[in-house]
Image 1 (tube, helix red, strand yellow):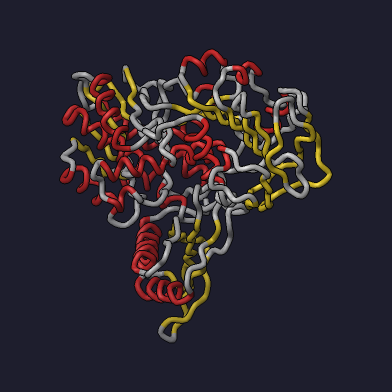
Image 2 (spheres, rainbow, N blue to C red):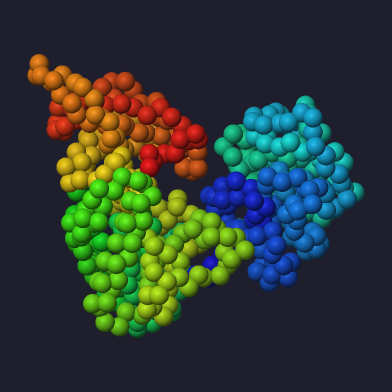
Length: 513
């Protein structure tokens, strides 16, 4: 979908924080796009980018196969900010020197700045920054001045203000860099001259206009999971074309307590959307019977979802367009070199490539998750759905260790509901970002009512995270954990033990399967 706002380009050199840079820029109300470092300079000019940011990366710039952009980019007159590998690459391509350091810098490091320039407006002269590098700039190119250094890094910040080229060895995009947001803001506003016109309300108006043009009088079909992305996409398209949209909600019986009914109520009553709910619980459970291996569960659920969706889609006449909840991380993770091409068959829940649709509409494909949530709230979607925690497509099937049975699903639904209810009722200053229960495949001996039991163990999981790429286990108060444990054991049959997972990501993942 075309974006009319001013734009900043992020060149991806394989850094783990490329998406985080983009999120920081978007948070400052400037639209940005992530592209491969191989992009042609002529395309940069034609797209009218106001600024360019080089991401970090895992390589050494002097290595034979290190990713390198076209050096003509430096002659375009567009301001450039190089970060970590991007800073080293700028030095390397413009005649400076990059060497391997005997002393590596990782983590919080104090950077001293010797001048208060445009990029450093309102930045402390001694500022804590996040370093992550083994190489360093040992000699700066002609025309560059060294503005910042650390105890072990002689060039933490260099710039050539005449050519509008700026390079920082540290990572301003991570939360650990105290003044990082100020530095990025200064680059966008002081140096690139951005206005900051990227806001969700203007996005909604533009999106509705574009959807109307693309759809015309045709009919659109949406696979609705009840998750944030597909829900916001469905409501946005409905705002544009009304009853021309039909949503298919496949309830596979693996949802949390009352979730299927809640999704149906919201979309039927609040938004009056054409909705087909397919209750396929028995069908999915029959396919999953006796299956314990996590990947096998995922494949069976994905395949069966496709089959149910296909069957329901065939019952509808003259549906020409498929609506998908694709968001920008999906596009980027598919490969930044192709990120600017609308994929004709980007999968939603594993939809087959041979489905008979002449067109695809992806109204959220330019948005990050937090932006999708803002759009959802602006569209009037209830907050509890918009801020619904990440929930895996296979649902509770991968929160039950071992085989899936109706009894186990009922046990997990109740235990999970109790945990989530008590967390939400607790007076947290900041609630954990994700929390849920897992039904393990462990049985242990217990005593209840002076009698021996031999029943299941439930594991509780709660994490704090800003991006779900890494996560730390949440330090939940003991009193709350005790209350949850007592309720689960008293209220849920066949559970006699509750444990709490205190493993961070990495080494563990957030989900157990």
